[in-house]
Every structure is written in C-alpha cells, then in structure tokens.
Image (cartoon, rainbow, N blue to C red; front, side):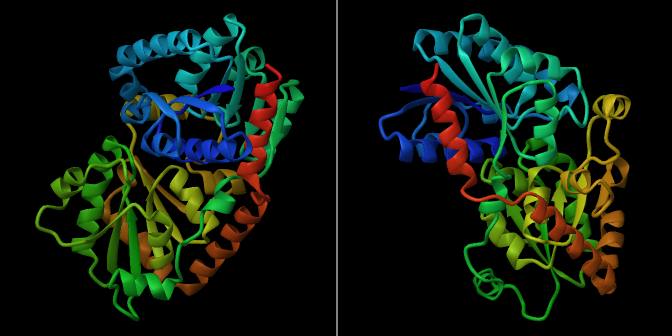
Length: 371
C-alpha cells in the first residue's frame, strides 16, 4: 500500500511524523511518500520535497514565494501520478493543499484532509471547495465537527493530538537543575517562533526585554528548524540561556512564557503555562485579516475559549515595553495568574481524548484501503 502525505510547516511536520509512526505500527509494509520536513523523513517517509523550508505566513509573504510553490505543486501532482499513489493525506497548509486536492480529484484520487482550513475564523467560502474535493476530514476541535457535518462532509474528531503530546520529559525541579536555572527566581521562557520572519520581527523585542527587565531569569527555546546563526545574529553579545528544541521541557521549567502566536500557544495552554502572546504581520496581511476575519482574537487559546484568556500583543504592541507590562501583571499579581490558570485548564479539558493519533492513523488506513 502507498500513501502520500503533504505538510508545509514545522508544526505539521510533527503531526505528519506522528501519523507515519502510527501507520507503520498498523501496517509495517506501508510505503509512505511525502512533502514534509526532517521529522517525517526520520519517521520513515520518502521525501519528495522539504516543503517546510518554504514555510511562510501572511499574504505578502506568500506572494514572494508564489511561483516556486506553484512549481512544487505541479511537480508534486506529477510525482503522485507517476508513482501510482491513490490516497493522499493533506495536513493544514490550505493555500497549497486545496489546490493539490483539486488536481488529485480530477485524476480520481482519494483525499483525506487532517487539520482543515480554519473556515470558522475566515474565508468561509473554502467549505464549498472542501465539500467537492475532500473524501474524509479529520478535525482538531469539537466545534469543527459540527461545521462539516452540516454540509455533509465525512468528518471525524478524536481529540487534539497535542493533548497527549504536550508533556515534559522530567519534573520542573529536575529541568531547572539541568538547565542551571537559579532557585527561587521567576523564570520567563522566550519562544520567538519557527519561521525566519518571526525571528526577524519578534526576537529583537525579546532581546530588548531581557535588557530592560532584569528582575527575572530568561531561557530561550530555539525551534529545530531555526538556524542557530539566525538566533546568534540577534543576540549579539547578550547572554541568554538557549535550549535547542525541547519546547515542552522549556515550558515546564519556566514560570511564564512569551510565545510567538501559533501552535505553541495551544501547547502552552495544554501545559497550563501562564503566557503573553506576541505577533507581527505585514501591513497587507493585517489589512486583509481585519477585513475578512470572523473571530475577535488572533490566537488559539482565546478563540477556543471565546474570550480573552491571555493577552495578545499584535503588531505595534508587540514590543519590549508592552511585554514587560504584561509580565509584571502576572508576576506581581498572583490572582491574575490563578485566573488565567483556571481558564487554561478549561481549554485543556475541552480538547481531551484517548489514543488520538492511533485512532487518526486507523481512520486514514481504513479510507486508503477503500480507495
């Protein structure tokens, strides 16, 4: 049996790798081809293209890479056809994946979509396309299941995979000792993102924060896909403890986290980590988002809760001074911190499941065998 899995960013590469490992447990001889990243390759996929390297967010950012991505799209469709692969699993990355799904359906292929476009947030018109080109949807949030059932798209919800995955490898005390963090001092974790544009816009403000607010200890988590040189470029001579990868361990070791908006904020919520969220988009992307967005918030914890649980510092507000103000609120006012923790627990409870990735793989395999 053959499958092709297509992912386009670092977070999806993690999910893709988990799916591959579970599929191989169920069907050891399965042949998996993919566009993905290092993690999927290590899990056993034959990589056609490292699409994670093209990872971008925002309209103007996508425009700059439009033509290279369209060539990859065309080449990917040809590769799938030439290798006689009948079932494709698409993970997130809607701008690319929905185009690929349209091509594949014309050739009679089966399309399984895992982590569908956030039509509940914006671009609701994509539902019509999804109905035409997706044979099986597998969603991450319970409210999404109702959306697709309403338009008769076959859909499953098993819980959010991060509910099972977001766990540290050791206790907080053990990790603090390993990372050589001082006892009795508040530790702030810095998570500047996994994309170059995030590092370029957010890390300089985080560096300023460490120089302006020295009452706490800082630890910085470098995403595996981010080159160490890019981090060092912005740190210069400033000394900050850097941990490569191990995001969950860094979250566990710190008292409060400053996150670049993205999947990491949901991971932080599942680990019940008090947080401040920062993000900057291009002016064009910001304009279009504000014009078309159906949600009041930009980050997943607040969207899931339907209210502001954590502070979002977006665009001009994503600066060292504003971050410090929000950190001080949480550090100096324990009641604020406890209030946030209670809301984060509710978010975590809403996403729970059992054997989530195993059930996801079982469904994918069942659909593939029917193709």
